[in-house]
Length: 432
Ligand code: DLL
Image (cartoon, rainbow, N blue to C red):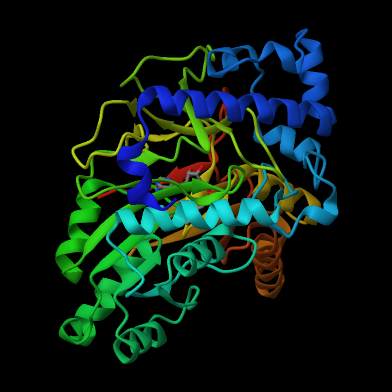
């Protein structure tokens, strides 16, 4: 069912019945197929029969990114590996990636959810859509790609990088829609202005996500490019892009709660909070087969509204995210944990583990500089040793983070020391 068919047809009661039936089935599936869930449920005296509907969800324990790490790579999959048709991966909190797997049906539902988002943004099968999210282990590229194909649009699988080439194709092919991160779109807007080619573009809509952005930034993009811009949310653990997206009224992102059941909890007490109160978004996948997750703590901070939207859709609306309850940074769409930097430096063993990450936004593009203290002996008259080490650190960090970073090696005791919780990040970006 694509967006418009689901929008009016399900009453609150019908939705609850559907969600409850799906939850019961899902709990049964994870109990019998995933050792981790069986043990967690048994540890609190629960059997599948105790979960009779959504009202019983709160009895179930939460799942976190650490659980995925502990069962790396495939330990939480609920089907035999042969039924997994694709894997994706995102950054874990330390060296190991968080790996996610999809059955063929998961891929179909994912494509359908993205198609709903695109339809909500006004994209139709007549559009030519350029997918400028990264393709590969990141879910953005292939997620948007399959969704756009599912709805019958013509896809240009551009991926990221080479903005001039992207703009040439946009002009030559008459591209009408683009899917990319909001900061990349702002950069594109800047190049369009420099080149004076706005009138040669047929672009009318952008579907942007993978990082936080504000209403002001959305309006700025709309004004600069003379288009409509929409927000799309998702995370690889749950599926990828397309978990939620906003509509033409921009009053929050409608979450596809027939597949993803949302809760908001206080991240300190873990107690659910009321409608409109900000807390951490927790999602239960109701239909996922490959990697079903029960009460997954996304760490994303937001609130939720249940009232019917002016657009007529009944899906609850997640408000723009106000931040995260952990220390994950999103830099040019790539998830980065300070602990990854620390782990990479320690593994190299040629620097001290004292480091500071400085994040900036230059020309709407995020930059990361990592400052690291190294032994005094590197600062002798011949600086070649320092240059060599700097290149080595750069290489190690690029490998660990999947991101090109600037490296500045500094003398011992240059970086601040903290008596309490240490600070490893200075984030100078301001969300416009
Ligand atoms: O970023 C999936 C995605 C791709 C979403 C393309 C939208 C478009 P991950 O790499 O696992 O997956 O990162 C997920 O990114 O927990 C949020 O913190 C953040 N995030 C994603 N979309 C938004 C958004 C993809 N629209 C993490 N607004 C999530 C704010 C977002 N933050």
